[in-house]
Length: 426
Image 1 (spheres, helix red, strand yellow):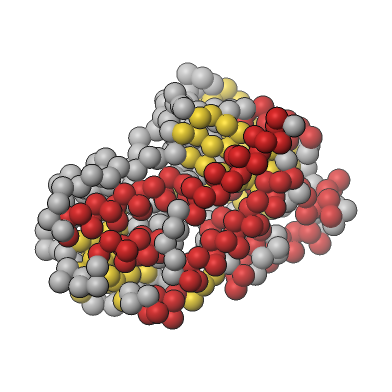
Image 2 (spheres, one colour):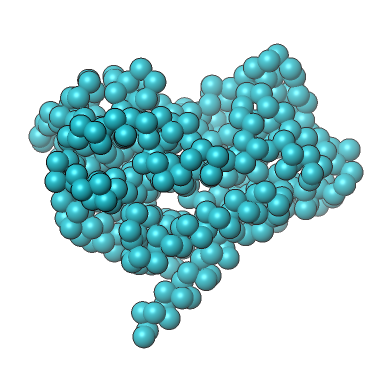
């Protein structure tokens, strides 16, 4: 009997457990380890941060769900990984041995890299976790009673940009509903070289679509931005030129700010030679397997992917849900083949898909493959995106509750692109 351990219980970890159940057979054991007792649907956090969702709306208590599927569940954080001993030591001191390990932890949020940054001891909010979003919603209600300037965006080294655009537009929509938008100057600050770059070099006309949306909503922007320091109500920003020199400096006032951080690997993995890169992200080959420790696989935001291109300010590459889904499918199938004594044959497609909701409309984009040049380079906008994301949230949560493994994103993309193309032909 093989013990397959999955570190992490998020959008990568739980689908990985379900997929692994399909490939491992009844004779092998699957264990999920997480520092949280619940699954959270991270894409809904921008809604939660303005009070459109409660925590209970976008979380699922995992113990009964996983028990029903015959999957062991340990609620305990990983403290130390010893890949040469095939062992994970947890924060409680408990040791867990494995035959195969799948790392799906997600990242550590690097708020400490900028003075005054972040929700814990800093002066900005976050939508990176459901608890951050709940705290952001409390601060939002205080802000709306005495509104003023907003600064929103993503800092240097960030690799996730969609939620920053979403939250800017969602705040705009909510402020209009409260009839106080006229009291709130808004500035979007981003490390991207241009609006709509998204860490992907743009997808379709995301530059034009997002610039137009921001102009229509009276949101100013600063690109090639490096956040130098944040104080209570003050933010120092350097705007760099194409050759990386400081071209302008900005001292921005704010009463409310949400900035997405850079990511890095979790402490339990960092500095393990040949497992992770200098930033702590797990090194994987075309089969999602680490080349050195060949019984370790990794999926999701915690894997190492080099930037698409050099930019004046460091910009990371996003790992979208569609991309993570393909990693999960390949990793599970490959472990299944190894368990049967076969050679691995599955490779992920690494395509990018995003539904960016703006509260009353939205932008969707699809890049196949993620890095240019691409076979498909598609972007579309409209009110349908808002409703599509609501529907997808409900669909994904339903499948997690039922313990069902299937290509969520693949099915959604096939429907969305076919419907949109039909509309465009009419």
